[in-house]
Structures are given as structure tokens and as C-alpha cells.
Amino acid sequence: MHSTTNTSIDSTAPLLPAADKSPQPYEVVRFNALKHGILSRYTVLSHENHADYESLVNSLMDEHLPAGATEQHLIEELASVIWRKRRVLQAEGATINKGLKESARSAKTIIPAAAPFEMGLSGEGTDIRNLMHLKPEDVTESQRTARHDLDATNKAAAILRKGGDRAYDRALRALLPDTRE
Image 1 (cartoon, rainbow, N blue to C red):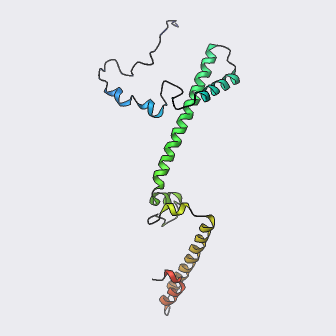
Image 2: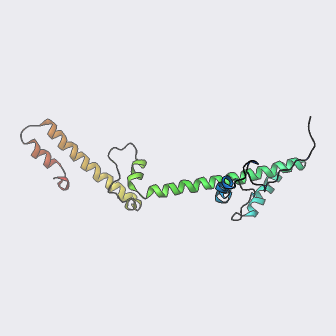
């Protein structure tokens, strides 16, 4: 049997169990809504544009053309959910950006993450700020030089594997002059 008794919930009442007289559990979480605003009782927070929210509500009303108070309420709830979801996505993006900024401070973490399958790229001794300002032609030249150095190193290694008379001296001459030591 459906009851028609009007039961209202006081949204300003603290979220504490009746048996707990201590304010400590609530004290711990009471500012969470101010931090991220996701569970705030206000849909539009003070730093957000109320006109943008009203525009969203009006767009949804125009799209769905509510036939009564219940449908209007549901559309307003939908607008609230969309608005809060947008806020969650913005918070998520901010958190991701914060993490990227923190990891970008260290080449030791960003270089292995950027090229996880390249053996030997530790990022140690690399100033990531120098890499951020490279032009494409600088990168191309650096890659060309690295390929040339690798080819010379492979040639020297092949000479050593083959062995023979004065193999070490021939392998040393096969290396690029600035890499011989």
C-alpha cells in the first residue's frame, strides 16, 4: 500500500548517525564539498557561471518539452547531473595535468614513460627542459648522428667478433673519433 504521508528530508541536517554524539566523523569530511563540489547541495558553485547552467537547463527544457511538474523536475535533475559530471571531468583533467607537471620535472620518469620499449633510455643526466625546446630539424639531425654512431659501433663490434690480426686497432679506427676512449 502506498502511503501519501509527506516525509521531507532536511538537507541541512548533519550526516551523523543518531547514536554518535561526537562531531569527529563529520568534522573529518565536512569540507569535501568545498574542495571538489561534487556532493555539494548547490548545483552551481560560487566560482561557476550561473548563466551557463541556466542555458543548459533551458536547452534541455526546449529539447524535451516537459508536460508536467514531474517531467520538469526530471529535466532539472538531468541538468544537475550533466553540470556535476562536467565538474568531475574538469577535476579529473586538473588532476591529470598536475600529475603530468610533477612527472615532467624529472627526465628520469618521463623519458622511460615516453619510450618504454627503448632499452637504455634512463633519462639520467638529461635536462628535460632542453628537449622541450628542440625543433623538428634538430631532432632529425640528432637522430641522423645517432644512427651514424650506431652504424660505426656495430662495424667495430663486427671487427672484434671476427677477430684476427690487430682487430682491436681496426675496431678502434672504425669508431667515430669523438667516441674513441
